[in-house]
Image 1 (cartoon, one colour):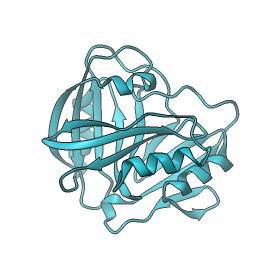
Image 2 (cartoon, rainbow, N blue to C red):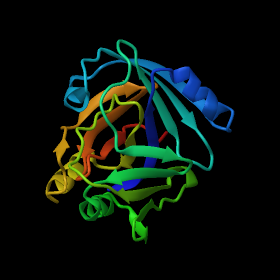
Image 3 (spheres, rainbow, N blue to C red):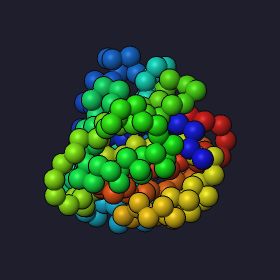
Image 4 (cartoon, rainbow, N blue to C red):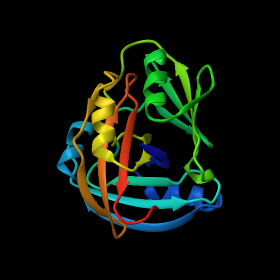
Length: 209
């Protein structure tokens, strides 16, 4: 099951500029890392990537933010997210199916087009606002410019992937893979919802961020 929102992920060409805006707003940087691009991410990237720089920023009362920068090429591709303070706005071409998708992820209805992760810790809470739009789902990518992912903490990632795959709400998904990030072992997977929204599932082997 998912237990809350670990972070939102912002991809940018200038990582330091984005980090400065959060640091002046009260966030604290907990770690920086440089990682090789994992092969499992390739189908969810717009162009070829080799290396990722990232910074992890935390706040006591707001969702953590991960700022990423692929060092070999500037951002490319598309995202359906916009981050507006404590709310992630989602351009939803399939609003009904997207509502069902976020409910399957453990979010609850707060209004007709507002869904909320209700977790014990304020930093694990987040609202997603669906903005109905026309057209087909874009081919979204984690290397686009702006907010590209919502990361959810899960206690059993394999079971969560199997359960979500059985809902028929996923456009795409990866298998789970393992990485070392910030000195911790993590197991990661990507899923894509009906409107092209990308969600990262994260299981941490020792403790919680």
